[in-house]
Length: 294
Image: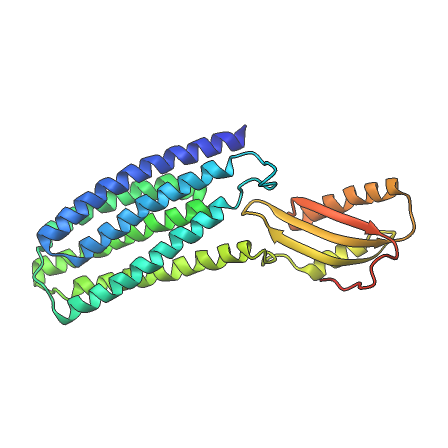
């Protein structure tokens, strides 16, 4: 029930954030055209991508809530990971487009209306701050929402930079600061986007969680009486909340009822020490020729 309430709350916050971003996108485009500011137009592009990112996040959460079926025996729990990759990848593409445009502006600076630039960027900053505050709580525990949160946070920082640049342009007519700020903002977004993609791809490729040591798991399991060896181990993240583990367990000759008791003990130990939520063990006695860990 608590999880359902959390999901409903997340969806509501995403919808509010989406509306805010599309409104600010329209304002930034109009303001950028009228003022001649590349920073405002880049901010508009960021805000538009934010709105799309939020839509993708919303759809992914809905898919994640779908029950398991014969075609998707895990359900669609990885939809949110895929959404995070799509959102972060779109940011990377946008950043390279902005690099190219900013370079052109550095070579041929254009006059910019600094006052209008500051006013529009200020409104955008307020909207982005509201959006980041709405998504901040859920961003800690959900990569999908964290990608959308990053979109909004980068835009909030971008708006501050645009406001600062607008003030310099208004008072000192320093027009080159507009493309320079665009490059700096894009570099920050690029760094954070690559970080999200690295984590998401590791999950998609079923890589072992970085905080889990297979050697430590081996030592823990082999410390139980009656267990001779653990081998053919697999450990991976299904999504951000679920870690799955499977292995072959070489045991002394014992009853099936005794292995059932051993299974419960191992499950409790893995949850307690490694936060592994789903355990599948194959107990055997003198079956596998290879006894390697992996």
